[in-house]
Image (cartoon, rainbow, N blue to C red; front, side):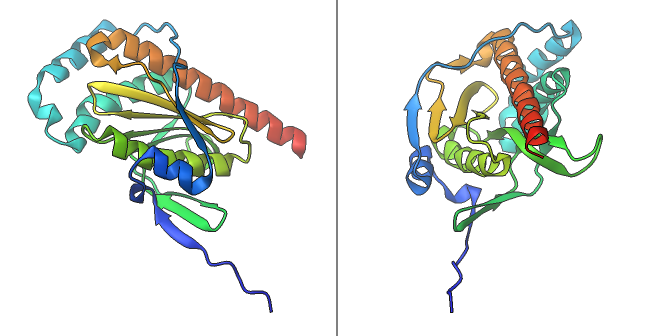
Length: 221
């Protein structure tokens, strides 16, 4: 009688840094500049309101206030311009070898199964997290989420994009094949227009990646 392989259930939050993720799944890691910029013009009223929110220290008291007052409005505005729906605090899981990765990421960018539907389909093309000032620890969580996304995509050559931010500082990463890359340049909301253009580039790439995987899936049928 063949003994069944035991499936280990592990939460995304149990990974404390990107090194732990790489060692667990046999990936490599490097820091290298890769994030681009893509011009975007947002309404002046939106930018003025956002700048006022940055001035309010109460918006930086904890993770939830940062997400609601700062991060979510920025992501929603730019993701919508790229026709890239994003989901907040929804269950997300995938089995990678003998490990079931599970949790509720702050943000997932994915195409719904049906237009305006409430269920995601693969591909998962971009993930985001926000933890106040705990960048190293948060990359462990986001890295595990990106591994799960890559598994669901069933195409390791198409990059998974990720980000970690505390609202004021933004870090960008990608997973392609078996290599994690985190952009080594500092990206600060002190130059808010540049952050907009970084995100616009990122979401544009994510949208193209989603279309690429969808086209490949059609050809394979």
